[in-house]
Image (cartoon, rainbow, N blue to C red; front, top):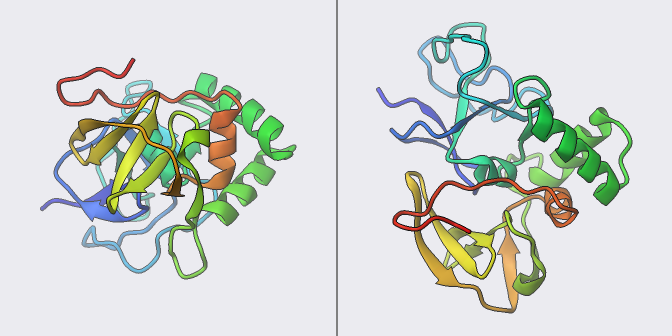
Amino acid sequence: MTLQNRVLPTGEIAAIPERGTLMGNRGILHDADQRLGKARWRHPHWVTCQLSFKNRRRALMQPGNYTELFFLDETTALAAGHRPCGECRRAEFKRFVALFHAANGTATLAGIDRRMHHDRVTRTRRQVRHTAQLETLPNGTFILHDATPHLVWDKHLLRYSPGGYTAALPRHEGPVTILTPACTVATLAAGYRPVPQTITGTAPA
């Protein structure tokens, strides 16, 4: 059975065979049959973790343990409202926290999590989206283009698929719908640089 544990840039949690390159945690979302209920989070501390850390091993979706979620890459995790883990991704965590504070005026990790939760999801579990001019957006921001998630990267829009980026389209100008939370976009603009997965047939420079 393909488990429903793959998070998309649109915030949806889908049943997709590809595993992804990062794991996430939002608390216990599954039941004894490894199926998700209505809840999409149990706490506001949404993190992303390495798939391998200190030889730890986990069986997926075990009773009483948090639901392991997976992402294509860090840019996808950021769009879905996650931040780096402070243990297994310590260096990225420290950079993210420092730049988030500078960009958003927060002072504590709890303040970061509260602001991120406000900017990423509504009380009805819908993704919070906003608009801006495409030419103003930093690398690492996800937008909707032709109703499909695309990643802003240098002079291109990289078309997302669960298995990787399938095309590099020329970046244009004008208003766009943004999937990445506003506070995270500000952190990217302040200098946080996630690394996306390689485009099929092309490596992002």
